[in-house]
Image 1 (tube, rainbow, N blue to C red):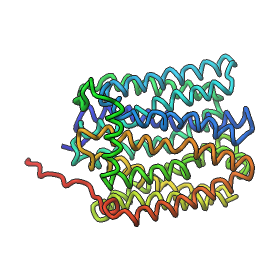
Image 2 (image 1 turned 120 degrees about the horizontal axis):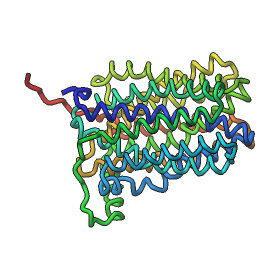
Image 3 (image 1 turned 135 degrees about the vertical axis):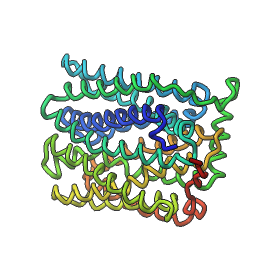
Image 4 (image 1 turned 90 degrees about the horizontal axis):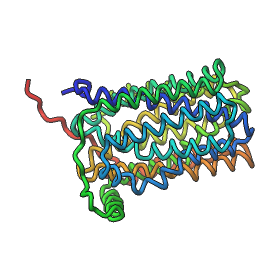
Length: 406
């Protein structure tokens, strides 16, 4: 059965699409808003730090909590937090009471919701479609997330220009509300994978040991750490490159934000063409290397057209990273360890907070091009080396689909 033939999968896909759309719009508008309020690259990085530090705090516990509370319930709670937070920022902007600390608190709350929501949504997929269809389901979701990655930054920049930040946050809250209502219609309850009396600390330790012994998941975990610490912090400095390097306004920032999504769309076609011929691990590792290399080149560009092309190239690499990151974990983890294995990826994503502070400090004391260039060059070298050194990770492939009778 194709994933789209499953009603609950279609509902989850719609909710995920709106979730991604809201996230990309919010990242654009908050970056521009902080730059206008503080005129400081470090303060932009600080908001990014507050958004991502929950991943490091809760990454150890997200898997056991998801198993105990339930994936569907975690998604509903997390999306409720997103909706309430976006609505609150919209009201503060509308009433002209917004302060910088409000954005920091909102970033922390949304980051906390994301640290539980993302692994819950990912680990829910095999329950809906089965392991053999997980990569197909991930490709479909990646396609819709890429559309959101293109439309979100463009719409965010456009709405900031036309309606102001308050109008933009009202739209974000609306999308979050619709996503929440869609999740309430999910009917399938994933089976609990952990005894209610189980020791959560023991579950965390067991999960980490399991990840270390499973080389495909271990390789995905390591590269996730490197990318979040060194490369993905580029989004923090995008408003600085737009305004101070390329001399653009919020609409121009929105156009830059679409570049990665356009590249990811192209990358999806490449992945679909080579999957099965090239191992998932190799696609993942080389994709991370390509994205980091493209962003290194972007850090040296002072021409809008060239910068946009390089962001498109980075998106091609990110498509490979995004699709295969979860696919490798979900297809190599046992059913009982799936949520905890995904929790380890959240922990890897938690390497982002120090990376954001580091890139902000480097940009503040030296320059944005130096900060981004030095980090992405290091990441490209490390990701390529990790891919070459881990043999089982490099060779991992997706499961064979069993024969389906007519």
